[in-house]
Amino acid sequence: MDILDGIAPIADRYDGYVLDLWGVVHDGKRPYPGVPEALGELKRRGKRVVFLTNAPRRAWFIGEMLDRMGLDRALYDGIMSSGEIAWRMLKAKDHPWFARLGPRAFHIGPDRDLSVAEDRAAELVADAAEADFLLNTGPDPDRGAHDASRYMPALEAAAKYRLPMLCVNPDRHVMVGGERLICAGALADLYKPILASDGRGTAGREGLDRSPDDLIFEVGKPDPAVYDPVLEILGITDRRRVVAIGDTPHTDLAGAQAAGLDALWALTGLAEHEHGDDPSPELLRQVALREGVDPIAAIRALRW
Image (cartoon, rainbow, N blue to C red):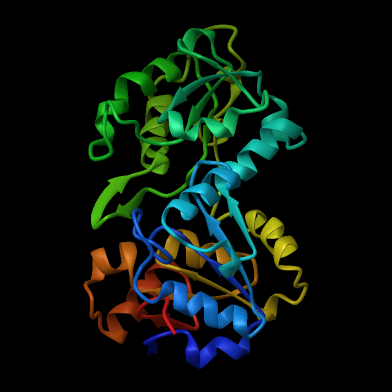
């Protein structure tokens, strides 16, 4: 697999850029070195740039977070997040999975993710017994982001009533400031076997007749559907002219591939954590084969 030092060699091949945030644009606290300059060069060349993230928060919230990091809004054209898409689906209730949901949500996650439920998208309740579904946005400050097993009591309480789980971040892990933390997807992985081991649930609950797979809905990459609103923001119909850049094969690269987009594998974030700062092309090729993805190349960092 070819490894590029930056995006300059392929910049003019594409009109639109779909960029992951955590692990590509920033490390959870600040932009990576060279990112603002690379984005500025893309904009000077007339390119369109949209951030697509599995963050379980609405786009407006993420925009304010990027403001605090000092990333100029003139450097990108829009933001789409799994939280924004989940909020839209909760409001519309036109997807069959969402159409079956009642309004009351038992929430696992931090308060900063509650934009997903705003504007009456969901009514939060403190007791699983009173809920219609489980809103999973990931770890909270009290139980921490290192050990998923600390969430077992809450997951078991939800499973007792066979609450459908809306997982608003399919990522299993993320790098924040050089530290590997669990995400909502790791809690979804725990929830499924709990549901499978307690197939009866509580009589009369809506989820009684549904399989564990059907009771868990993950919003975000690698679902190709999340790329449709991104392409709307880009305003580009020819997908051959759009490239996606991400650090995670099974979400970023697989999602782009499923959506018919070229992909670049960023060797920052989780990729750097798992494969080091100078992986061999052969190692990357083998990992990509195992993951079933075929990026056009790897890139050492999002820089020019």
